[in-house]
Amino acid sequence: MSSSLPPREGSLSGLTETEAKEFHKIFVFSFIVFTLIAIVAHFLVWSWRPWIPGPNGYTMLIDHAHNALALAASAFA
Image 1 (cartoon, rainbow, N blue to C red):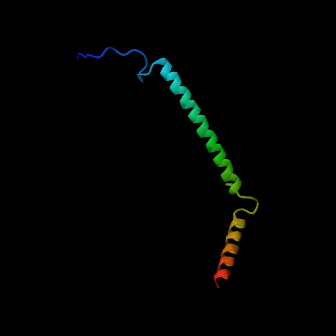
Image 2: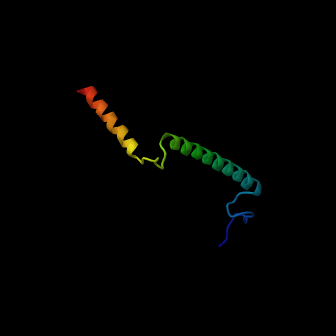
Image 3: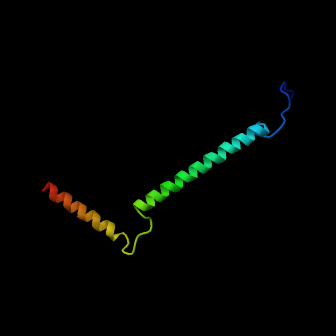
């Protein structure tokens, strides 16, 4: 097999060391930003509706739903 291309030097990705370092910096920065956004989103969802129920379990949520349905039914009656 003969090829007219010169033999490659460097890494398997084809990037030079400088390009690889630059890509790594962008990748790490993007990963950190994504992780911080995910942490903030999880905190906001937790503060809105905790995943672990309180001492009464989820019955409080069910009671509020029943009250809301009763109020809506009386508004349309």
